[in-house]
Length: 178
Image (cartoon, rainbow, N blue to C red; front, top):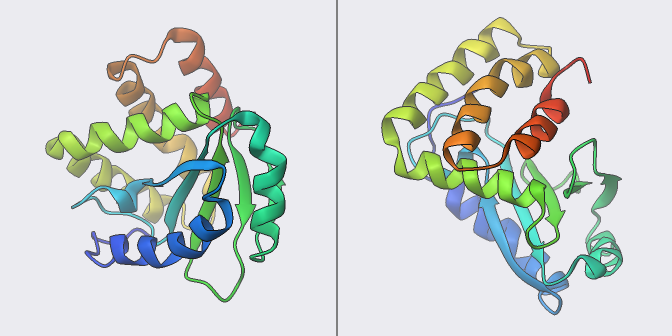
């Protein structure tokens, strides 16, 4: 279900961020609010996306351990290069947590899309309308929903100056025929 933008989403992010930062702040640079809920005015699924940016890729084992103490379960990269995913504890608001080394493709993808949509309001609105249509067309098929958004996202990433190889790798990770 894709909803109109909810102005409480940044507050939900901050509430989720605080305990994570307490666990990883000694070796992480920041925690970024990414995804559609991080773009004011953009329609989104009501699920907060958070990305922990490590100081070094060597800190990944520390991050996995620290997050496990909060109840997060490491799920691996799920086919996305430079991004480790975690399942959130059931008692928390719906969210996705990722951990990325600095400069990784997974991180660049998250930040480029968010930052572009924050500064291009008309395209953010078009993207929100696309997401609503796809959610209605594919209410129980997340792969088809993601696949339907991929061309739009790739166009944003191209304008954000990701190179052809990076675009190809992101496309491969997002297509349902992977």
